[in-house]
Amino acid sequence: MKNTGGTDEAKRRAGEAAAAEVEDGAVVGLGTGSTAAHAIRALGERDAEIEGVATSFQSRQLAIEAGIPLTSLEEASVDVAIDGADQVADGDLVKGGGAAHAREKYVDASADRFLVVADPSKEVDALDYPVPVEVLPDAHPVVAERVRDLGGDPELRAAERKDGPVVTDNGNLVVDCAFGEIEAPRALAASLSEIPGVVEHGLFVGLADAVYVGTDDGVRVTE
Ligand code: 5RP
Image (tube, rainbow, N blue to C red; front, side, top):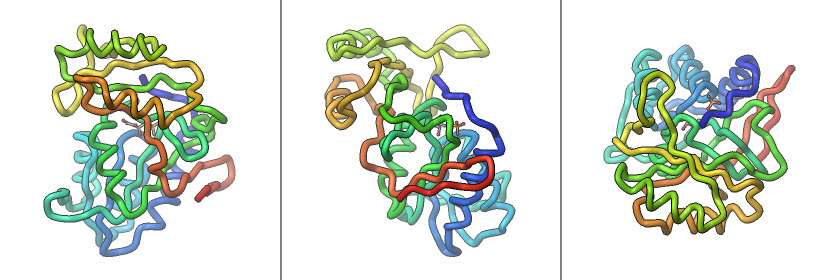
């Protein structure tokens, strides 16, 4: 499920401001989504001497179009990652609106610095956005049962343009799990990770180093 609020202008400001922080020679984790896409394009337009590590098929394609050479985690370590979010509360995130959160999480978490880029519609006092959970395909009914035990309301994500479920870049399915207001994100993150059949979930707790929010007339950065 994607949080589609926010103007493209605000997203552009955030993406471009984060891209401006990247120094030549850096290996950059390239996030997924419309806000991270602005950062990828800005890095390409600047002709920055960088290498990218893609977090999804989408960001890989964008990097190729932008002329950014790609590398992998086997060949390089990530200096800085720039990625979007569906919701941000005090630096903790819900991600996975683009079903890319599994790869996003280990690329973003491995970076020396992880910069989140967002528009103001993503900012909240407490996370309450449904948490995307990537599951092995035949595990979705048993994962859904365990999510209900945790007080959540699971829904298998359906593809928008064809019948059937969304399939991730890894060949798995996504269950969006609504918990209402998430009072203890770290505890919920641990509980979701423990469920057999779960590949990764979209709660990013304590991973972000800075949040860049594009506003009407500038960018607000929270470290
Ligand atoms: C993809 C993500 C995206 O970063 C998130 O959905 C935000 O996207 P956008 O910048 O288009 O609002 O987590 O899995």
